[in-house]
Length: 119
Image 1 (cartoon, rainbow, N blue to C red):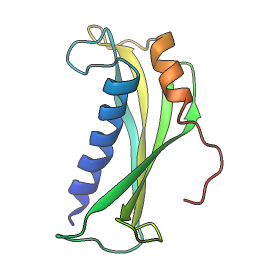
Image 2 (spheres, helix red, strand yellow):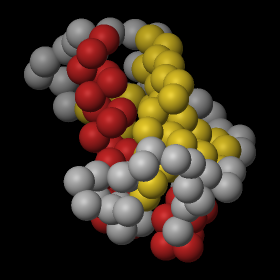
Image 3 (cartoon, rainbow, N blue to C red):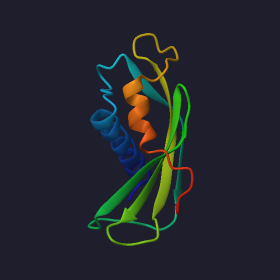
Image 4 (cartoon, helix red, strand yellow):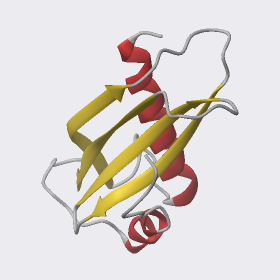
């Protein structure tokens, strides 16, 4: 699987979570998250037709930023194939000035905060 596909998976799981659990809609929310850093570490290859499972956690939650980490696993197989993630800074969608997270966003993200894990 090409590196760009991993980043697409990372973006998809984060945006899906934000939409379903935090009330954030990228095209219509007054405050949105912009990616300011990203990373990906690859441990073993995955390829079609393998089915993938993704795990999402928040490793740091600030007033206007959040650091996500995503583990990529082959379905039913350990160890992790890749670990990646990025930092979102929440900004006002119209001005792009830093804005604080809403209560709904913070509460949704707090559910994913994990300081230590096996990743």
